Image (tube, rainbow, N blue to C red; front, side):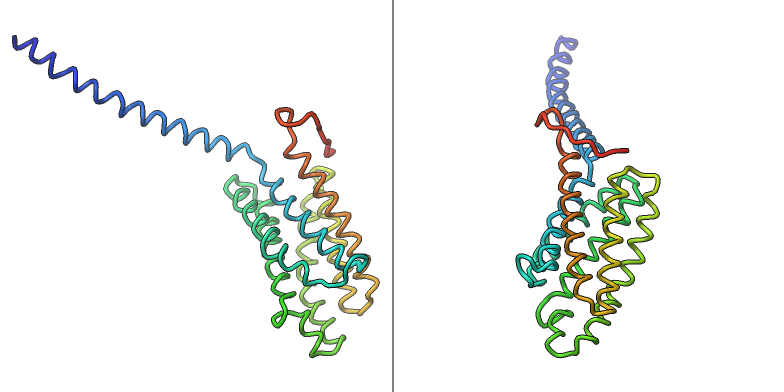
Length: 227
């Protein structure tokens, strides 16, 4: 009787342990799947998507062919570019990709500062109503110069990376060079040329974004990005 009694008491004990272990196993599997997804995703696609959108807006504004009103880029700078580049940089940092993390996070900060620079009543665009063109140009040049130096630094770090990476960072150097020289010299034509280079950069980033996110499971389209 005692043996039978103990067996009756043991059965419920084993019965209640099983769901607990099964639940824990499920949680572990979910975490592993999530970590696998994070580790296999490409943050570069997110970064380049934001860069493509904002540089198209800035490019169209700087060329003056559609509209000559730089503040239209404020929204894209302070939201799309700032958030996408910053988030991509954090993911790259988590993955241990130092170059991409530094590049993405710093350019995220650039778009934040550039958006503030364009804000009415705050930045350099509104200062044009109060200061001379020369003073505003010098201020813009001082703003762009450190970013030109940073862009050159990043470009030199791409010399052994893929062709598309070198192209993107090379175009960024050209844009900052034209913007900096144009600001210091007050040559409006350089700003317009930088606008066209921005559009080229935007199209390149759109293409690269598509090449990163397209895969056989969602589309038959495959876009090469060079070596």
